[in-house]
Length: 382
Image 1 (cartoon, one colour):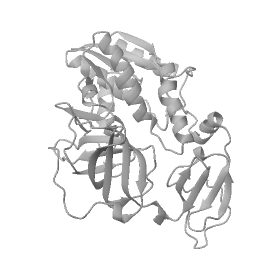
Image 2 (image 1 turned 135 degrees about the vertical axis):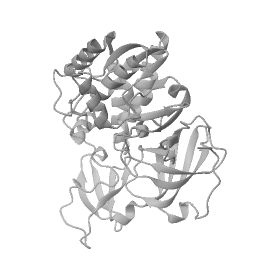
Image 3 (image 1 turned 180 degrees about the vertical axis):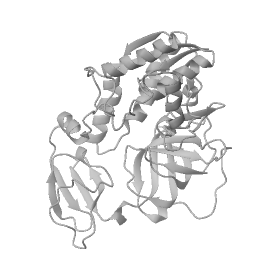
């Protein structure tokens, strides 16, 4: 097959490209220039799209003996990822830009261009597994990236390859060293790639501006502080609330609600964070099969969050767009609008199967909205 490998300049995509070559594919490497002003150097594990990253990817391609190109996707990345990220925070949401990048850049814009140029598949260095077209967790639980890939459709997965998902990260680094790849010891990127300083609040403030509002007590409605904009807060946040006096009971306060229209940020005790049900829109059934009714599954609501048992029911909104109603069997905390709710079917032998996902639109803290204690017949075969 003709395989295009997205090479970020890191160790994971380097080994993915090497393995694609070993498998006998006709491989071409491509580095995506996603920044309109790439820096010459990255700062440790922060940042991406630097000239250093492009140079490292090119040097790996030279070692592997494959053609290499740099494609400029900066404008598309700004429109589809950065602008959406800023707009979501301005609306009181907590988005995941990696998921959006996979959805709209790597496995949409890039994949479409690859197919138009005659490639059969797009390979990346993501930690996930594909088995018979089904997306499953990687072998390395600590590095698993199936959460940020769950937005992909079955059609997109049919054109994807994840060559390193069956191997722990330590072995990937060792393999890169054995192959003599310059990226073997390169630090992993952390945080948000387009905010190399790591200061998300400052990044958002520079683009959204000052939109003052009040921080109010969830129980009494008392105004406790003023703030410069809801973009500086997320559900479950404890620090940086700007409140001078402690709570009357001495317990920590957390952000429990965000109203972007009024600019109100509500804070309360940990008990106010419990969520018993989730409504998700923009639903994608990654497995390629929509359940024919309620299904027992596990849900994950953060990239590195834990799992909780749920009953998930496919539904549609008033316009017929796919949605998911998720009733939890036990409460989750710190669940924010804009995050992805990813559904898994547990499978210890082959890696948990990704059933589907949706963006969190609303939550309910009423225990009565949670799942009943009796089991529900699964509408999907694992």
